[in-house]
Every structure is written in C-alpha cells, then in structure tokens.
Amino acid sequence: MRYLDLGTAKQISKIGLGTWQFGSREWGYGEQYAVQDAQAIVSRALELGVTLFDTAEIYGFGRSERILGRALGERLESVFLATKILPVLPLAPVVEQRAVASANRLDARRLDLYQVHQPNPVVRDGTIMRGMRALQRVGLVGEVGVSNYSLARWRAAEDALGTRVLSNQVRYNLVDRGPERELLPHAESAGRLVIAYSPLAQGLLSGRYQAGSPPANRVRAANPLFLPENLRRAGDLIAVLREVADAHSATPAQIALAWVIRHPAVVAIPGASSVQQMESNAAAADITLTEDQHQALEAASARFRPVTGPAAVLRLARTRFGGPPGRR
Ligand SMILES: NC(=O)c1ccc[n+]([C@@H]2O[C@H](COP(=O)([O-])OP(=O)(O)OC[C@H]3O[C@@H](n4cnc5c(N)ncnc54)[C@H](OP(=O)(O)O)[C@@H]3O)[C@@H](O)[C@H]2O)c1
Image 1 (spheres, rainbow, N blue to C red):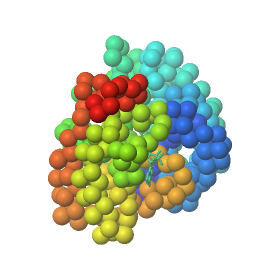
Image 2: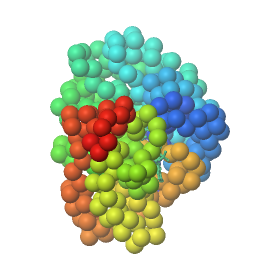
Image 3: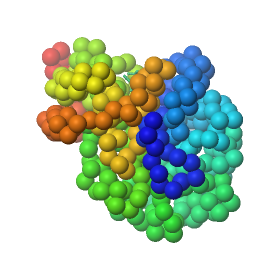
Image 4: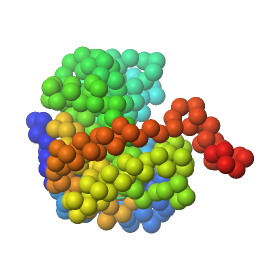
C-alpha cells in the first residue's frame, strides 16, 4: 500500500474502501453481504494496509456507519475514518447534533474527516462551517471535507471555516475526468486532497458487463453508463484496459484504479462486493503505469463518447419501462 502525507494525525492510504454498498438496498447485495461479507471485507482491508474508510449518514440510512463501526471494532483508532453529513438543514447546532449521531453509530470517539456530502443549493456554507469549527474545537472532528463541490465553492467553504478544508470527494474515473480541469491542479498546489468516488465507474471499468448482460441493481439501472448502447461504446476503452492489464498480469479494474491514483493529490475509495475485489483493489496501489500506457488509456478515454443528457434519460426510461423493440 502507498500513503499520502498531508500532515493529518493518521496516514491516508492511496486506496481506501467506500462503504455505500454496506446495508444499502439500492445495491441489492442482500443480508449475507451486510451481516457477514462486509465484516470480512473490512478485516481484509485492514490487513492489506488500507487506512481510509468512507461512509455517510445517508448510506442505508445509518446502517453503513453501524456496519463499518462494528467491523472496525477496536481497530477504529488506527484508521482514517471519514463520514458525511447531508446538509438538508445546514445550521450549526444541527451539524453538531448530526456529527454526534454519526459518531455514536460508528462507536467512534472522533471522526477523522467529516464531509459535507453535497453543496446545499440554497444556503451558503457559513452556518455549516460554524458547526464544523465547534466540532473541531471540542475534538470530535479532525479534518473537515466537502463533496461534489466546485473549486470556487471549496475555496469559499475554506474561507468560512477559517482553516483548511482538507478534501473534496468527487466522481473521478476514466469516463469522467472533469476534476482534472480545476480540482486536481488546486489540490496539488495547495496541499489538499481529492477523494475519487466511483473510480471504477460503478463497475463498468471492470469489463465484466456487456450490452447483453448488464448488471442488475437499482444504482446501475439508474446510471446511463450501463445502457446497452453505452456498454457497446465502452468496448474500445475496456479493450485498452485489458491490454495494459495483460502487461502487468493485472485486471482491467486494477488498471483503472492505478490510473486514478497516479495523480499525487488523489486517493480512490472503490466499493467492493467481495473480499476478492477488496484484495484486488488494494493491490492496484502497487501498479506503476508507464508513460505509454498512461497515454494509451487517456486516448481511449477521450474516444469514449457515451450517450448522455436527455437522450440518455429517455433511453433509461425505455429500458426500465419498456418500449418498441430496437429503439433502446
Ligand atoms: N460523495 C458522493 O456523492 C459519492 C457518490 C458515490 C459514491 N461515493 C463513495 O464512493 C464509493 C465508491 O463508489 P461507487 O460504489 O459508486 O463505485 P465504484 O467504486 O466505482 O464501483 C464499485 C463496484 O464495482 C465493482 N467492483 C469493485 N471492485 C472490483 C474489482 N476489483 N473487480 C471487478 N469489479 C469490482 C463492485 O460491483 P459488482 O461486483 O456488483 O460489479 C462494486 O460494488 C462508495 O462506496 C461511496 O463510499 C460517494
């Protein structure tokens, strides 16, 4: 495993574990996964040197936090524990009360990173950051982070907090490279962190899914990337991932992760549906891509043009609710 040194109390592994999957019905992994597999995945992650564990109060309506806290047990003290608040009512006292509730579910004395899950579209971050400041003062929160923030809003949040907002958690993978425009350069120059979510594009980049065999669960049924047409269009990118993977005796998923974390200011938090996936993801931290391989991946990524926008929404609706054959 490799780690990032940003002067935090505990070190942050380049590959972490995302736990939206834990106890969330929309992923559809079932009870055995929530009760047993999740526990085994966390234990294996710890053995492999993973220190970054990401959850949120909204995942499984608190269940993910409970499962993660139970799985970590006493080892919780040694990891960099990250959770998130959904800022529906972003008032300082509410923020403080919600942090305590998260810490209780996790059975943690301290949240190493407390993130604002999404920017509130109506209320600016002054009040929420007042609550964060109070939480830092009493030691319940170590670092403050944001998620799905633009660079301008990240900076404004930092001004409001009066000290660093360590990280911005955003979607970043070979099919969504938006963060490269502003967020990555800023993080690198300012000593901040970008936490890449959906680094495998929710499994698309594993190459496991084809137009005729898409994944079956609510999360991916709502993701236009898994439309048959887009799975077909992704074929070229998957082929390049496979080619690079073969050169490293690795898998396409591992190469997709190695590409994401190649940037010095980026760590990735893939979810895992099995212990084996967790092992494979952790091992990706040790893969070093050559410059040629890096360029080949970026060229294939640029060639991939998925159907997006209203056209994708229409096709999703047809795929879900049926429509004339041949028009999906
Ligand atoms: N801040 C936010 O707004 C936000 C949004 C989304 C996610 N997140 C966080 O980011 C984490 C990860 O994102 P995500 O779950 O959306 O997407 P992801 O990590 O790109 O995809 C996870 C899925 O990919 C498949 N997979 C994982 N490892 C694999 C491997 N080695 N080989 C093959 N397939 C593999 C698994 O699904 P199958 O085995 O079923 O194919 C797994 O459930 C979440 O758990 C959550 O903590 C945050």
